Length: 221
Image (cartoon, rainbow, N blue to C red; front, side, top):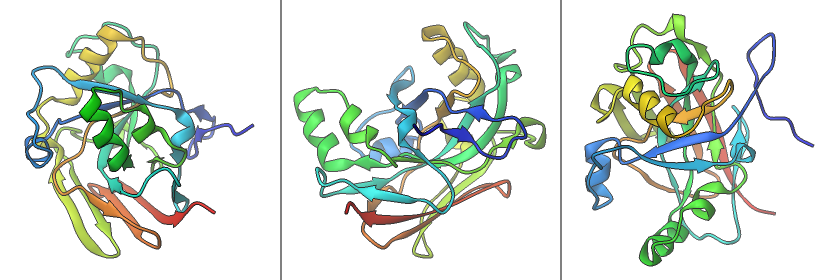
């Protein structure tokens, strides 16, 4: 049985639930022909989707079109319920850069029928994450450059200040719905520039100068 843990701690912190946000950057919402919702749009990924630096995203046989979405991740450090914006960052352990991989063809079909996105978002390897940087080393999580290169070509480049909701607002909202626990990971949404990835691609993501992630893409054997 695989135990998914954040790898760069003396004491293992096990990965919990992955709480993901959609359409948090206006330009990305526009490229998806959608609007930024008045409240965060939340969905979940299983922890079994997590992979780490130098691992591979596996293209499942069920999908013919995978898309990359680079995101800032917020790692929860302790139990959090009904946090206010003023205290929200007290519950943060650290930050990372992540990829929310999406089977876009499966998601598009689900959207047509009003179905949930669990299949499109939940395949194994669909949540690559970097090492965690502790929060005391991050001056302002709401002002970090975020970028993704595919085969050395810049695909996505933005800054977390362009999110429609601050990290504090996101934690306040999510914790009003569900209890957050140590090791839970919040993925805060992706900027514009999402696009397809194929077998053999190399993806390199950065969050400021604090987090780096490199993963590969290959077909399911």
